[in-house]
Image 1 (cartoon, rainbow, N blue to C red):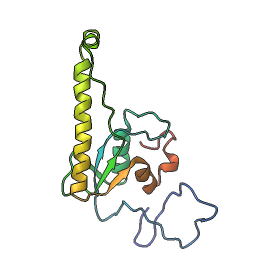
Image 2: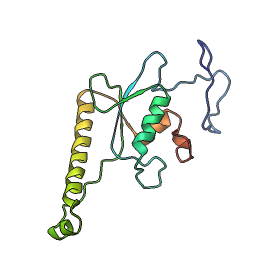
Image 3: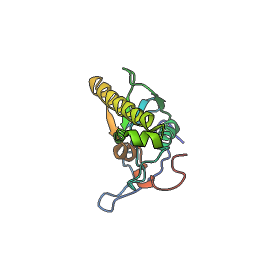
Length: 157
């Protein structure tokens, strides 16, 4: 529920040294009800900080952005408001002749990994050139209040 002067919010954590009290100002730094923010998502993500990349993390981040009223695009433009940037994609080692005989798709997988890292670097450079704010996964989840909840099931959908 959001009104002109009041709204309902969920507090995801509080600190003993800095507790939440009546009349505290509450704000979400990347959400504005009067504007649809446009996001681009790139890279690989470890949302639950277990050291493993989740194959569907980009979809989870997209769902979260859309849940907050944002829009996700596949390209960086002058209209992009934020870039959520994960880890650089892993580049596979170029396969040997023997490896290509065992796995006929080994070279295609290697070339696909090169394309992914090139795209990642291109997106990063475009964001820098257009002065688009870049959020790491942790910073993004922290700003929207989901960092403490990221490892719980059902948070992203």
